[in-house]
Amino acid sequence: MFKRSEPDPLRQQPESHEPSFSAERPAAPTRIKDTATIGPSIRIRGDLAGDEDLLIQGQVEGTITLEQNLVTIGKEGKVNATVNARVIIVEGQVDGDLNAEEQVTLKKSAGVRGNIVSPRVSLEDGARFKGSIDMDGEVAKKSVSTAKNSKVTGIKSPSASSDEPSKSAREKSDEKQLFTS
Image (cartoon, rainbow, N blue to C red; front, top):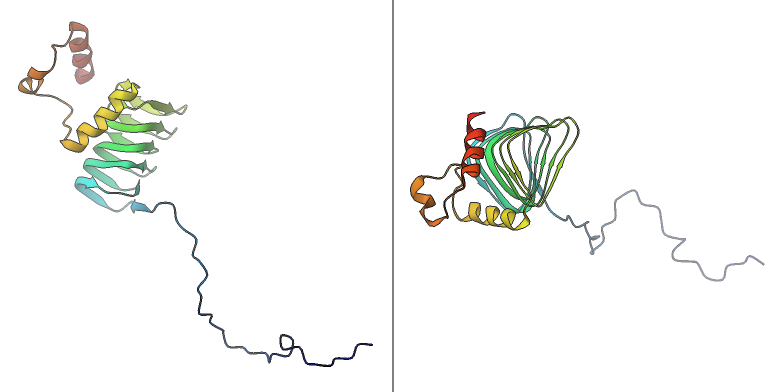
């Protein structure tokens, strides 16, 4: 009744303790985007640009330009720079302007001194912020593209404003108040 007529080649293989290698490698999981990390002991002074997401746990001074990427300033991060990115998340300290094409999020541990330009801005309860917020989507896109084409200094010289219409007294007063407080 349970008689075998032919040996089953799959069941009759001798046991081997050596690893077997196949000619085909299994497909590695694809990563959506790489994230570069600036560790807590790293200090950078200058302009940062690239094409990958960035996590900052160290100190950065200068300009950060990652227009199509996510920039996260971690809890240990200290940034004294203008940041231009698609999305910016702040958990640490920032002294500088934040220009995002899509969104800026300040977590409860964040401390920011500077202006934010983005169509969407989120401040968690407990986040510290001093500056102005401009949520005009067109302005945000222009800010990121302007920063891409030239360095953003935050204060324009009188000769640079000759192309622009003159500012109203209220706008001048608002600027004066920002820089004196």
